[in-house]
Image 1 (cartoon, helix red, strand yellow):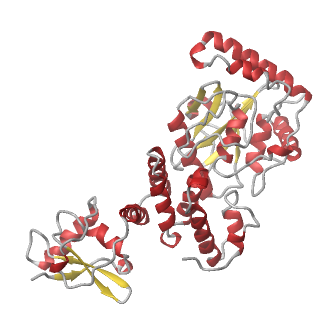
Image 2 (spheres, one colour):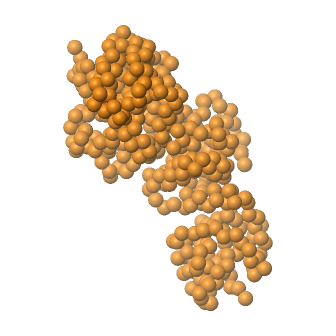
Image 3 (cartoon, rainbow over the protein chains, first blue to last red):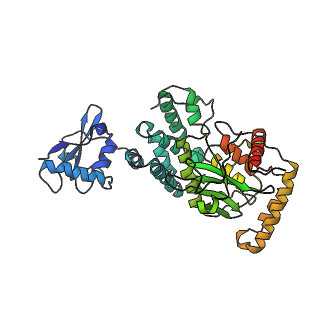
Length: 206
Length: 229
């Protein structure tokens, strides 16, 4: 019998599938489960590996949030009463994991920029353009500060001819800025031309 | 009118980035002030000469460098640039060649490492500042508008002479062809003067600053520095 306990702050109850898999898995938690409620993925914590008391599971989960986390492919679905969430390619998963860390960083703007700059730099150093492309393809400007969105575009722009997702990411950020009523032409100056159809369009992008 | 600030101790009160300029009538030198935390002392990143990229602390520059704000950049943009400047120095150390010709070909790769695209490749103190901004998609100078001036060739000859002397002292820093390649640029390559680039970085907002505007504002900077005859 597995005890379920819902946890997490109110703002986090719309986590994506990848958020859930990444965020909870460490040595303190025995099995990670998800429950599907319509289109919302709700993270649940199964009882701790070391404790039977479900009340202590919350503590273990809280500790888990502070510790480095890693990805483990969910393979014991028979133990859980839930719908199996669809897991994307490993590259997408890795990229999303890094992005989730970015979104959840509680640090100064300089430290957050340093994180994304270093992430990109390391990928470029290893000639891993696929990973950078996956970052750009999955980046969500709604989940982070503007300084991170524009910083990401500027730090990757020198390689944009080799990154098929760069322009799409620009379009996504542009659409986000337009919706907020920001001066998109000014904020993205140098990255795009002032008459670029990307910033003139108000079409919502996926 | 440009607002130039006198040398300030213990260090200039910039936001995250600024421009520093010093020198005399014959020779000026420009660099970039930066810090990634407003509680930190700003450092001065400048290309002192061939293979001498330097990142100085205030005790090394604050007493002698005039400085300007880069007010056309938001705080967010300034911080992004400051992180970028820091990375460029971390990646390259002092290894940036000095060269007289400039083009918008991109001088730094995706990691911030200097691209030695051909043997003629190099930067001056002023074009180093330009390249840093331009490679982060903030082209502060409209290089197509630039005009060569008769006195530029004299300055270029002095620089090449200085490089020749430097090569005899530090042959390890020079390739066999570098100085010879720079001779070919004398009287040919347009000169972007330090005060003109400093002015451009100060007034840049959305469009690259043209030669006409930069030259005029650059002269204003020299007046404020007391460098007029």
